[in-house]
Image (tube, rainbow over all chains, first blue to last red; front, side, top):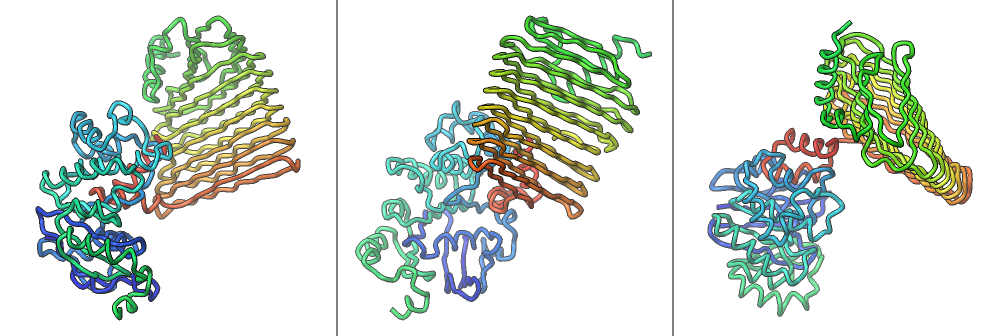
Length: 244
Length: 314
């Protein structure tokens, strides 16, 4: 189980996250739902341990092990990975090099081809392309999804997996979530879209850096749909949201 | 003196080390020159390619004249199989009006310890002519090679010239690379150098664009990776001397190692109010987001850095 206990995160005295406590059990699908600017991506970066995202307070545990102070690569070695909302570009690296991490992952050509097809890319057309500015945002995102799948992670944090990909591809996102789950992983989706959250079992609803609600995705989505769209909480300081 | 077949065998081995395809040096339909030390040990010409080599002090000078559209790239293999010495190589290349040609050059000195390779290339591209020169270097790991290279090209109206220099597979030693092009009306030029310097390598690169003719365009680009205690100095200059000219100067230097010293100086000078010059320069460690993207897949910082650098230098 991946667990966040009472996570606070501040930047230059400004509170971004407050008392975030979350539990992600293996075998389930999760979403972290909220409007833009709610702090969802920050939670993802804190879990992954990116530079500049060390919690001000609170701890992160993976199966009882405190991983709060571990570097990114150590968390990844324990099975946690992250799909960035806008993945980085890499000059000169081919898709094949990127997906195999320069040959470190011993993957057969067929395995790579199968995953590329799953994310809607032709292996023939993409295997030797470079992961640089020549790719559209959607193509880059699909390659990043493929990269995450090939790692077979235990916890895959997918930050807005559908952004940059056309709405018709929601089925593809569903297939990706199912694939992770079928291969023993726990998908954690960061999203502001109800239809994406509905593909998961349980959700956390975030607003201005705090957890407003947690529960079954279906129930939370209903609350989100009827309440959040009309609400003025967006980007208010945490304290003001708490008072409301 | 070394037996010819032995000499040929060694130079071919050196050529292969630098990534060259030996079969291309033996094909009758591909023009080629093979130089070892101060001698031309292989020469093949095709229709439209005139090659006139001559011996000079400590080296070789080759006059090349291109007429028509040359289908296959001309292959040049320059090497030195000894450990110590000095080699001077001069190429004088003329691309006639509306002619086109490309070159693939491999310079290989895999066994040299105390050696200077001094190369000069003078290019004249007549109106409408096109030339592309790809130059790959492969040096020994001794770090004691002294490499001096000077390229000067004049490109006349509507002509095109591109020079791609790469030294990324081995240590550099000491390197002084100078490339200068003067572009006539509507001519286009592209200078591009990529270098990976390590240990105590010392690299100096200077690329100059003279945008002399109306509507001429050019780019001068340098990519350098500096590791360990390497020193890299890059000065890229562009001079907009005529109306409608456009020049762009790019310098990207990536550092890894506490002892590296790198600097980049773009110099832009507009001498005509209708000239546009731009530049980009960046120096520093590899991009943090790229690094963390790979580390989030389980690579260590070292492994991630190496993979990013591999992509950049090829």
